[in-house]
Image 1 (cartoon, rainbow, N blue to C red):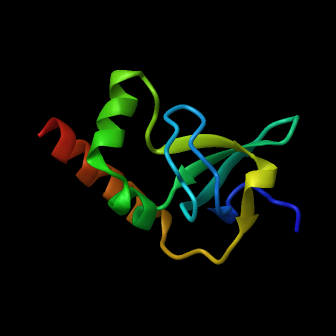
Image 2: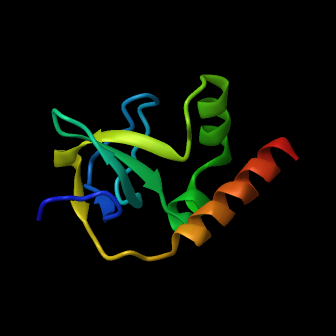
Amino acid sequence: MKLSVGNSVKVNSGVIDPDFDFDISGWQGRVEEIFDGGLVLIRWDSVTLAKMPLGLVIQCENENFDWELMALDGADIHAVRERDSTADTANAAMRITCQNHG
């Protein structure tokens, strides 16, 4: 299946975060953008955000990375059914931001 913006995707088993050497197998989100060369920008969904270690969020912020988004090679993800709404995702991100900066 060809991915499109808005599709829900899941990270394949064994995929490691390219910036922090952290296993992100099974993380899910929505396709935000698809780039030439096969990179896919993913916005993590509310379930993934809720399970994301706070230490990882802090590390991302300290290094000026956006913890809500990640670009991965299209071969590292596959399409799945959506498991939340975009409003759920926005609310989860807000909770994490408030918790981290509260």
